[in-house]
Image (cartoon, rainbow, N blue to C red; front, side, top):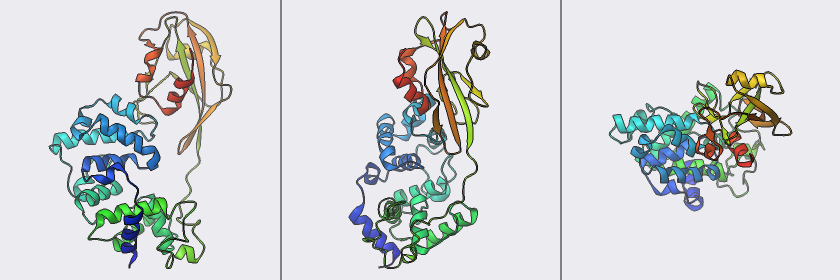
Length: 343
């Protein structure tokens, strides 16, 4: 058997039972692929189930509010995926009569749909022979063929895509693409690949040269930015607080948060800081809630975060009852704080 036949044979014997494997509905395949970008299956599965229950069809998703989309997505990270997904659902309904394009070329025109997602939908739903290349596929190909070209370089992306096309099973691209991704997730795992019982071990370059843990190669990321966040958790006599919406193109766009004071280094919040955010407040006691900063790590930045309880002496205008705070879509950092804080 050649490379692709071995992948198909392995997949037939080892594939996991997952809900999107029992359908060729492009809406559900699209939903699963968007959610599983930079997300493990175990983490993404409950979100997939929640979304399918809340929005059984693309029309249901298109008709939903962005706030509801973001609330259901809360905790999954990379929120631009959710916003792009909502935009695409609207486009599918308004411009494509609720039908997904049936080709790679048509799918890749949709917002938030890149090469990987377009390839996955085209092959799984419509059996178009378009190879998928995700992190798992990069790992399998780099190890099997002994390729040291960085997978996150322009040259590497092009080379691996060409190689993926050369070795794929063109007559059954549907199962082959799912198979090689599954193979990379389970058999050719990142840290502990199961080389002894691997069906490819007789011709794997990385195994022969003992380079399993050196491949694939990635270019190093830039320096991680350190940021200092101070959240003002305002509490008035009526047990109300205040939330603001994050606007602009930064992290957590359109999610809600407590008023934020960002500083160049750790600070102690004073009354003046509160009144700069919301003027004319009668500010009472200010108390640091967490004993040491909470370091929330994102891909390119670390957020050193303090939460400050701000007692307000008068009812807040546009105040939100504390019991209603959980209804708002917020970053997971704030969601975890809300769960534990007692007023």
